Every structure is written in structure tokens, then in C-alpha cells.
Image 1 (cartoon, rainbow, N blue to C red):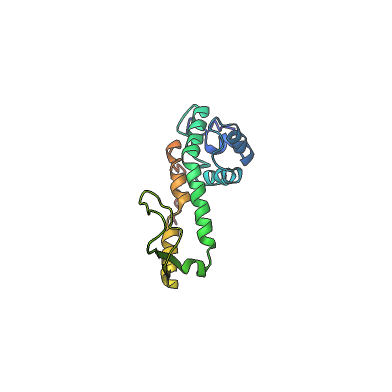
Image 2 (image 1 turned 60 degrees about the horizontal axis):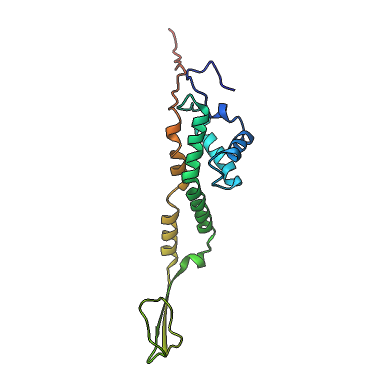
Length: 182
């Protein structure tokens, strides 16, 4: 429940949703639908709680504020969820998979049956000659490529999108000093 002794006149994130269950109930009933899966929404609750749990919201109308929060989930959540899935796949690749490079196949046909067309991406039914180039990365190049792909933390940038829904929290605790008396 909202702490009336707070210096802020709006509730904190943790006042609005005291636990995961309350958040998930509101998420399930949101007019925005459920753009991210339940497990991802559950994880999002804890991520938001860890960052904004003690932060007061910027609005006095809690229901409008919830709609704004759920609209951010609707707008950016599916992309965040997909990027998380891609990062998980990348993290799971073996060294051999990372070292695989592109493959280039070149076919040539002398006097193919029928007219070749440039309006289609279809392949010729018969070929006379084929050359294949298969590339392989060194382990260092593969690791460097993976490092670059994993360098961006998709979760931090997603959570940053919610910052405008919260007031900055000031630490108003007095600073006490101890000194020795002569």
C-alpha cells in the first residue's frame, strides 16, 4: 500500500505491484494484450522491480501510468524478447558452428532447355558445371565476431525506455560524521 509518510506524492513501483502475482494479473488484464510470453513478462517484472522498485511514478493517475507502462511493453517488448532469443542462440553455438563461413555455389549451363529469365529467382533445371567455395573462419575471427554480436546488452536499453515513467529518487538520508574530541 502507498506510504503516506513518503516525501513524494505518488506511489512507488513496489506500492503498485507488491509482488509478481499482482503484476502478472494486471498484465493479463491489460487492454494492450500480452505481446510477450508469460515467462518473459515474469522476468520483466523482476527486472523492472530491481531497477525501479523504490522509484515513485511520475503521474498521480495510477491507471493511466499502468497503461503507459504496458504500452511500452507492447511497443518494444516483442523486439526485446526476440533479441534475447537470438542472444541465447548465439551463446549456445559451438566453436565449430562459429567458425563456419559462407558457402558460394556457382552453376553454369550451356544451351539450357527453355528460355532463361531475369524476372525470376528460379534456378535452371539442368547444369553443366558447378563450382563451390566454402569459407571457414579462424577461431580468433569467430570469437571476435561473436564478441561483437554479444557486446550490446539488449536488456539495459529496453529497461531504459521505462525511465521516463519514474521520478529520480533522491537520497535524503543525513550524512553523519564522527570526530574525536580532545
